[in-house]
Amino acid sequence: MISPSTSGLQVAAPQGPRPDTALSTGQQLEAVFLTEMLKIAGVGKVPETFGGGAGEDQFASFLREAQAKEMVRAGGLGLAAHFDQSIKDAAK
Image 1 (cartoon, rainbow, N blue to C red):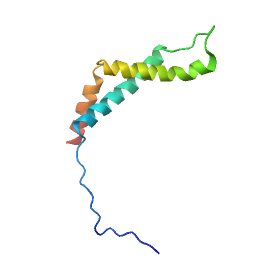
Image 2: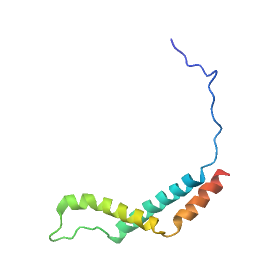
Image 3: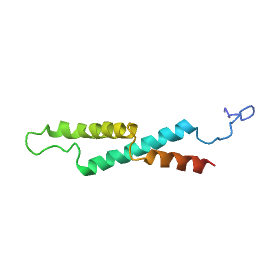
């Protein structure tokens, strides 16, 4: 029987999020939010006639996600900054 030994095992103390990681996470959260808002607004909705069928409907989500990421990259709604600050405050 082999039992793991914890002697000699060093575990680093948890540290707060790195500033770049917190901002990146905030931007990802904002992109997810914008993707859902674009979906609700009907962006990428397949037209009833002469549409691309099921394939177009499946790939519309990729288009919305790409549009949302570009919106965030261009400045977005400013949610990323709020998320970033909240993450930093929670780490304190």
